[in-house]
Length: 101
Image (cartoon, rainbow, N blue to C red; front, top):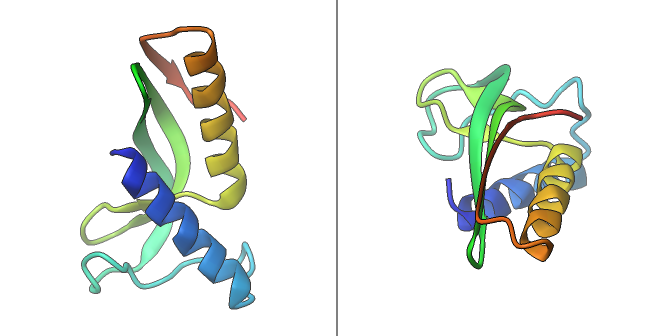
């Protein structure tokens, strides 16, 4: 998953918040396939910044039951982007890790 997809997912979460969708109600119709609904699950997220690539496994997400598209909440997205920025700052090229809140 590229940075564009992460930003797109972050905007989807922000739109949900603007519509007043709570954490409990966040199951939604998938905006990619328009067929499935999302369910709590996990995903693997790959983020890149300049020459740094970080792969996060077991990231909590809302996952489409039909196509598998994953949507992250705002807090998880902020956490992953913070880790990516820190990794880029210290010169990491490739890092693979399990998600930890």
